[in-house]
Amino acid sequence: MILGTSWAVPAPGHDNTHMAIVGQEGTVLIDCSGTPSVRLTEAGISFESITDLIVTHFHPDHVGGIPLLLMNMWMLGRQKPLQIYGLHHCLKRLEDVMGHFHWDNWPNFFPVAFHRLPERENVLVMEKEHYRVYSTPVRHVIPTIGLRIEPIGNGSTVAYSCDTEPCPSVVRLAKGADVLIHEATGMIVGHSSASQAGAIAREADVSRLILIHYKTIEDQGKDLIEQAKGTFSGDVALAQDFMQIEIV
Image 1: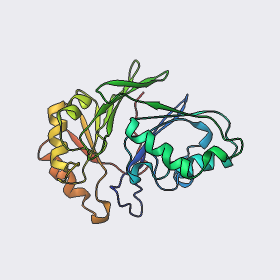
Image 2: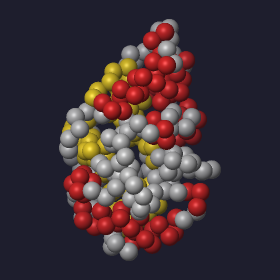
Image 3: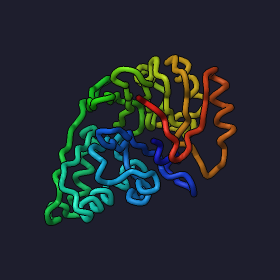
């Protein structure tokens, strides 16, 4: 489920870009922004169902909600562990931030396990009963990973570019995927335009392209779709908050 679609500046109806994989085994969050207790409630996702958190990179619009997430889980009495995955660059800074909140002094705080991912392509992040998640470094202004979610058995493979310039590793990440969720911030350093996202989708031979991390304050959705269609002949859609994508 898409929990937010906006670039760094959110707008009414468009939280910062983050998402969740919701399954029978629990919920895996991909980044966490804003006020997570409100957003998760709106999405019908309980705090108790969250088993894992994958953080793609250490920018405020992607990790700014994590301290609130952890504090709210603690205040609501969580006891089971939370697994957090990411590159060392991101996890080290996240630990530093939580240290400034003195989370080691929060009474009866639940266990949190940090899993540092190698900064190389096609790393298995986790394997659940019905799907696997892989990470690949992409080209942003700080160390960042994109993700690939593959079903075990029948289903749809979904790739997520995260924040990135066009680069060969994104093409490999998305190769042959049923759905590519690709950012469309614009042709600026560390990001991609909708047209560039379309070119990546074409080169990766994906079936469907969903544009995300776009400038929602400019209400340019239709233009973004047309720009992407100029370089990609497949289906193109604009991500919307609470959009659901079936994997299995």
